[in-house]
Image (tube, rainbow, N blue to C red; front, side, top):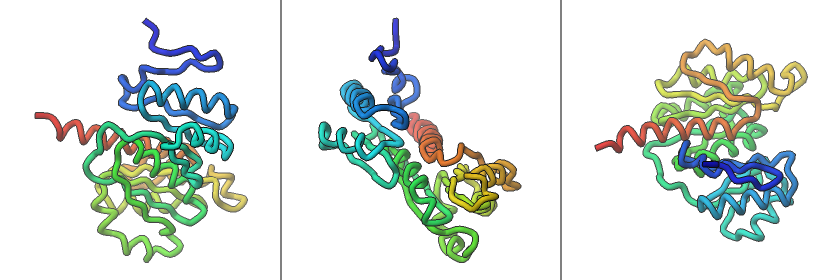
Length: 227
């Protein structure tokens, strides 16, 4: 039996929520407004919720006109609809190095929220002014999962990784000067971190970090919910 729906321009994975706990998420970049709207509408019909990432302003405007209950988070470039089936205990903490990293950090935070996570945000705490980061030591150590978003040399992930006993998900950003290589330098720095327990997603991939954090939270929720 087919587990996808052929819409002509795409094959929609309508069985994904049953397999993974979340519906298929729409990657808006490269799609037309009409395609994004059609997929969003079908996901909303089947699952009662939908998430569009890398949404253009035109996509967001059209979708929100058809679905007034949908919300457009402009800074994160995403449109989300519907509440998660469960809200997990504990928090996902999203840190970012500088103000320029906030769009990627917001993509991570909003994705995790859509998937059922309680999210805290602490922004502009890069290592160039490390006292800012250390003033939040308690909140950092109390979080279940920590997402660290940073450009430049990406050192923030290593510093945070050395402070906690929880999973740290590092997100390199394309914010930085020439030898930063559009995010390659912080990505390699994060991948070669000497702090144990730091995992790394792709450059500017806030969505992937938020999704991964929510998967960890879901596992904890399911384990603690067993009779």
